[in-house]
Length: 286
Ligand SMILES: C[C@](O)(CO)[C@H](O)COP(=O)(O)OP(=O)(O)OC[C@H]1O[C@@H](n2ccc(N)nc2=O)[C@H](O)[C@@H]1O
Ligand SMILES: Nc1ncnc2c1ncn2[C@@H]1O[C@H](COP(=O)(O)OP(=O)(O)OP(=O)(O)O)[C@@H](O)[C@H]1O
Image 1 (spheres, rainbow, N blue to C red):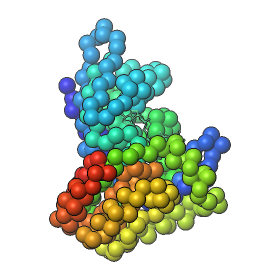
Image 2: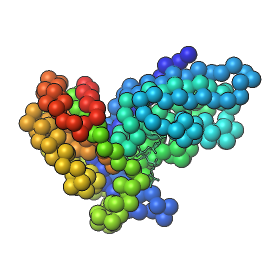
Image 3: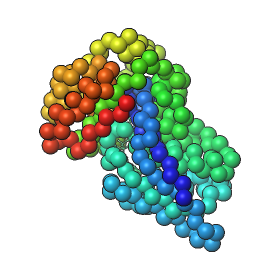
């Protein structure tokens, strides 16, 4: 039996640029990988056992609707010779957290499938599973992405420091689909250019590399989420009090995060935040 650790991501910046005819949105975002986020085990079933089994622990996901089932179905549908498997998945974060953990599960399974079949999945095939699957399957630590999230514009963005990351998953969740519906109503994004959003992301990276304090990071979902949930203001005040350089909301919410130069400051901030009932999970990663 094989144990695999799947990644997730933080959006250091996230700008929506335009709505496409298929309803998806072009965006520009700086993705930061969270490695080893969730654990899964994969076991090939004996030949003749013609069913997959996918079990999830730690979050409620209907087995047949699991993104892992979608990966197996889609790639077998393209004629890939994938054995039947028994997969167990331990979720660290629930769906609707904005950390792309489901996409990370899918990316890890695709990498495993590529390994056993000797084939390479195309970017379009990964995007069909989820917009941020190509980044999560890419191995980049940090990259600036465009398109619907699948197009890497700047590969391998480098940081001088390994920031301590404090990540909060609130008890409320945000459906990505619903968040995009609201943004169409509330945010005037049409006319923005990818180059500008990309420059903004590079400015954020440069400031972090100089160790400068940035405060709230740019994310087009932030203002509506901060208005809807008073908790964010309190969490961000706590990040600032303990000396965070930058903080923000990841993806379309609900998770928020802060970057600290010193791990000890991240732990002190985390300790204070443990007092908030609205927070479901607190994670510090170096
Ligand atoms: C918003 C981000 O969190 C930014 O990192 C991600 O791009 C979302 O990625 P994801 O959850 O993998 O997205 P998908 O599962 O492909 O799409 C979920 C839903 O979000 C909306 N969606 C997603 C990505 C995108 N660029 N435009 C969209 O409008 C679509 O309504 C879609 O039906
Ligand atoms: N393995 C999985 N992990 C998480 N969600 C999954 C998984 N398989 C299927 N899903 C479904 O995918 C959807 C995930 O929703 P959503 O895109 O809002 O997630 P997210 O955590 O906010 O990630 P993102 O950052 O990509 O937006 C939910 O409807 C959930 O039931």
